[in-house]
Image (cartoon, rainbow, N blue to C red; front, side, top):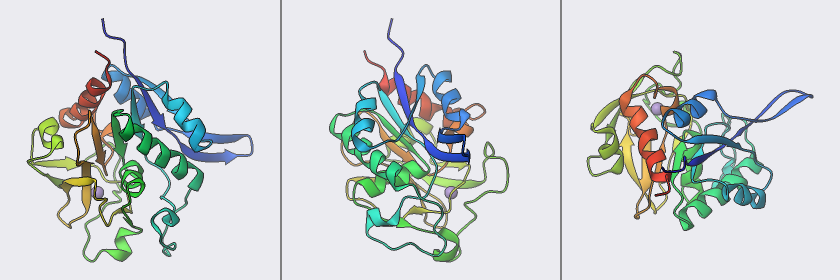
Length: 240
Ligand code: MN
């Protein structure tokens, strides 16, 4: 019998008060990994070196959502509507992306994760969609995070299309930033009607390297297409 793969999930920074400060991962990530046969563990960020040490334990990696990527990592100054940043986390995750690609470790990048993936590979971000993209649709939905709010068109030649099995799907949307200049080693796998890049994948063969701008972990329990993303990712992370 196969050993269950261990899936490291990067944490966001939270500080409730002086006595409650640390890394945080939304419970839906853990539930979606466990429901598809993986063992979820939370990865703290301390520095790049420690992150690479924690990766030794992992068969697959999820870059989770959270803070805005510090624009200094793509050579820009902060826009007026830039949200809170955590540059220490960005540095740790940039090291994780490079290590994962060099060592062919399956990588699922979600929300901030797709943005971080693009920046780690030399791309840039739109710092604030509402003020920088004319006639953009609403990407910060007001309804529950588990509910779908807009369409994306999936490229038919993408791995994402093979996994989801449809060229047009409903997704949730909880982001105010997005990919601007795409890194040369990535290719677009899905876009919304306003042209925002909603999914990417690595342009070269890997076991699994996909980024999505939406939150499939919060839809997977009720949406088979979104669950397929986790099922395929966990399958890619399973040692034969
Ligand atoms: Mn969106």
